[in-house]
Every structure is written in C-alpha cells, then in structure tokens.
Amino acid sequence: MSQIVVAALYQFTPLPDFEDRQARLLDTALEHGVLGTILLASEGINGTIAGSRAGVDAVLAHIKTFPGCVNLDWKESYTDENPFYRMKVRLKKEIVTMGVGNIAPEQSHERYVEPQDWNAVISDPDTLVIDTRNDYEVGIGAFEGAVNPQTKSFRDFPAWFRKFREDNDIKKVAMYCTGGIRCEKSTAFLRSEGVDDVVHLKGGILKYLETTPQETSLWRGECFVFDQRVSVGHDLAPGTYDMCHACRQPITEADKASNHYTPGISCPACYGEHSQETKRRFAERQKQIALAKARGEKHIGKVVEKTGRDASRGG
Image (cartoon, rainbow, N blue to C red; front, top):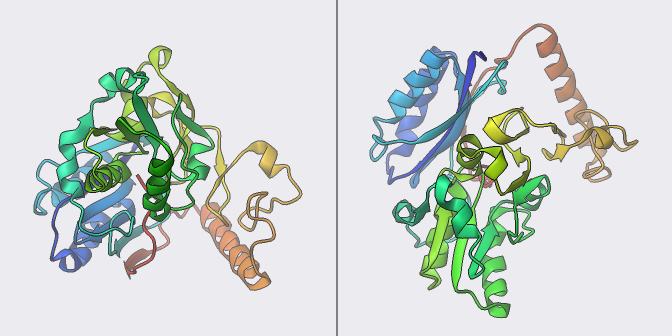
C-alpha cells in the first residue's frame, strides 16, 4: 500500500486572527514532515498537504483547534512519493479568489448534494449544470452535459454568470468543482444574485470519483489536481497527464513530443509567451529541481508568505 497520505481540505469560517496562526501552523507541519500548501484568510483555510499518516493527522488535529474547524472535512488519496517539494503557508485576502464581497460562503453547506445523489440531480432536464473550474481543467474531464464557462480565472465567473443569465432562462442550478471550495463561494454568489434554487456537489469531483462506481459514473475524462500528480481518475488513481511547469497546465505525451515543448520552460499552450529572462529563470529552476531529485531531496525549505495574489487555482 502507498505510504504517503494526500489530504485536500478547506473550511469557510471567520478567522480574524489568521495572520497570528501562520507561524504555528507551519511549524506543526514541518515538525511532522508534512509538505504542501495552505492558504489562510479572514474567511477561512484552504490547502492540500501530504506526508505520513501520523504527520497528516497531527496537522489536521492542529487545524481543528481553529474556530469553526472542529468538524473539518477533508478528502484523502494515497501515493508512493510526496507530490510536494516544500511546505508553504500563505496569507491571502480570500482562500479562493472571486473578488466579490458581501457574500456568505460559510452558509452554503445547506445547499450540498451528496455524491450518491448527484447523478439524479444533473440528469434533471430542468437543471442547469455548471462547471465552475477554469478552462484548462475542464479540458481534460467534466460531467456529461455540463456548461463550461471557459474562464481563465475564478475571478471571471461572476461576469460570465451575469452575462449568461441575460441570455438564458434559469430555473434550477447545480454546480461542481474539484474539491468543493469554489462551489461554496459560487453558490453564495448566485444566491446574492437572486438565484434561490441552487445546489452544489458535496466534496466536489474528488469525492464523487472516490465513492462512485465507475460503471454508474457520469464523469468523463480525468480530474486536474493542484499538485505533482496533475490528474486523477476513478478511485483517485493517478491519471495520465503531466504538467508544464512554466504555465502549470496539464500536458499529454503528444504535447511533450512537440517542438514547442521544453521541460520546465514551455509547452504548446505557452510557447512564445515568456521573455528570455523568464525562460532563463525557468531553466535554472528546472535545473535545481532535477538536482534535488537526483539527490533524493524533496523538501526545498519552508516558506512563510504573505501575498494578495490570486488564490483561485484550487478546489
């Protein structure tokens, strides 16, 4: 059995003192050999971590001491090697960036649909099924019949929905995302826009793939994940995609055979988009990753970071 536990977690809960919690959370993870990325904001916590069973349990136990996190839920999968190189705890304005204020995602739990009930919900012809993920994620897998907003960032979702609503009669809405976090926020947003009959998939695609037999599944393709596994399939088995470490998008073996592909520097999706200076930085990073891997090193160092950059690439 694989020895590394990968835990994807989030919780919308008021954390007015989130900055004060950063250092202790990071130290707890490092003390137990856990790697990954965790985001902290005044609206809650979001992240994916990986390590030994005991290590991951220790970090989860620490997070459960946060206000509103005693019943923290998370999704687990297993792998032979840690999919992360370091441990990062970042301070953010939002744990998933939509850029819309005055909504209450912590109240969206009442709009959950359990994975075992999801097929019936999205098979209703009166229900509009919306994939709230970005276009590169939708490109490798989606539920049958779902609308693809073709967004580049979760920030684009509010404007897309308002325009879509102008042109379409909406009766009922069912939304889904990777792990549930974006759906919590998009559900709160739709309710603030006056759409009352809206639900979302509890635990997201990952929980559905973990618990739904493949023979009855309405999922097609693979699910993009935000770590070195790149994608997973049913039972959360590792997928077939690799990642371009320049643009962070999934790539196939055919992409890697392209003349536009250079490991860590470019792929067919981002070729020609980077300056020579950026390419030099990418090349040096790729060199250091290769050297660390050759030495058997996975932990490049701890990172304590405060940033307001877009945190929408997750869940």
